[in-house]
Length: 338
Image (cartoon, rainbow, N blue to C red; front, top):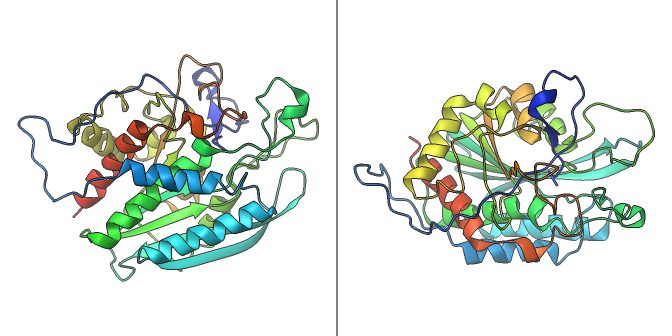
């Protein structure tokens, strides 16, 4: 799915055009521990991430059906997300906008923001896209390519992790302010079967809108963390190249935290590919360094796993161990921020 994100293979980095992409999946990690390695010590008390809870939030999204803009399922799921953030004590903002898709379709989009301790100046941004791909354009069948996908991993997994983070934020307030943003219209980018003229920036429409018109005037944060395709079985999260260039210090902080917690198999300290995803627009339009934690599977043809942008992206591939590794790592980072 990346989701609506664009994958740029290493050999094509100098090309001007980018492709929409998703994440990859790699070797499954069996690490379940949450204790630091010997000789290291946490600075703060960090809540325990509940993977069962996150899994439920992923399922509740997919139960609405494909969350494609302009559909009843999209509206219903958006209302659900707003309700959940309010339930978990966030100050909620919504941004409704008419965004123009690659084929000139007008998308009734809605960015959803939950702010914790909104008066604090020291802030960290956590984000994911909540829409799902309107096309299974990686399917072999031409008929199947025109059908929307469930998007359990590409979309719902990142949101599910952040809903569990929101629940923890309500129970234990960190030192800094946290903003959780669910970007819309990320995955409505140009499909592979499109025969019209190529248009740049057809992915990540919601984050492009937010980057130009943030929910709070002159919004800023120390950095951001984007979650994309973070629930797939066997998921691995290599260090995405745009993130390393523009948020290298934060990449190091996050991957160090994952290894400290015993999740090194999920977070190899190796360079992955470069992806056009929401983090690019957070940085380019708001100058906020933003790290994309996105599944990357070097052995797969797409780089994002065989289920990417297919009907195989459903609840059958969602794994609690992957959700746990990502969610606990995010909590470790934000609760140790001063």
